[in-house]
Image (cartoon, rainbow, N blue to C red; front, side):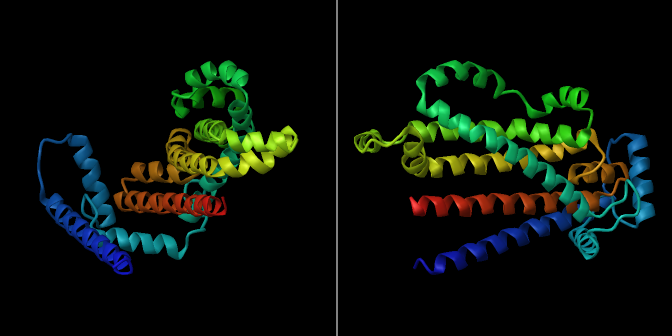
Length: 281
């Protein structure tokens, strides 16, 4: 019974995908002849772009598939500042995400340990956390651009800001939730604070810490796209915005699908790491 469930789930997923693609095909076919009260300049612009590209106003699944194969066939081309392959743009985005994410982990995990182990630290830092945590990461972008004066470094800073809170709070929660009996045994054995932290608290809190890291990577990948659309230059977010300026909807949908696949891959990598840590525990 259990062995058949993955195949049943896969079959259901394939059925859902088929239905979605069918609706997409119907919508793109009917959209080409649909008329309605739209802005005249926008309609003229879309019509000109469609005529130049030989596409319907809204691309069909076949058109998107063709464009995706073209992008994947040569993902690392460089034909100018504003014309670079989708692979290069993804590399820029992933580099910024991993840099900001790593910096956030270096700060959030030790600080989360301190907060979780010390009620004094929790009471002192909690007001600052509660004030800063709800702020949208993109709200920091103007200050980052003004002080750092570099769009790439500013994007890394924004990733740092959005990644730090889930890791910090989950680490603090995991450390504070370690069973008192284990800590009492460590005291009985006269273990020092550092040894207790490394050999008792860290293994017990590791699954919770990894959950926070998994949440952070998803938020970071979501935010980098918006940040790059805002500042421009390079990255998958800039690629999407640049294709909108060119009114290439097929390229926009291709980029959206690639963004989703990369985001799922990052999430699943952290999910595997989380399960590995939990099983070791």
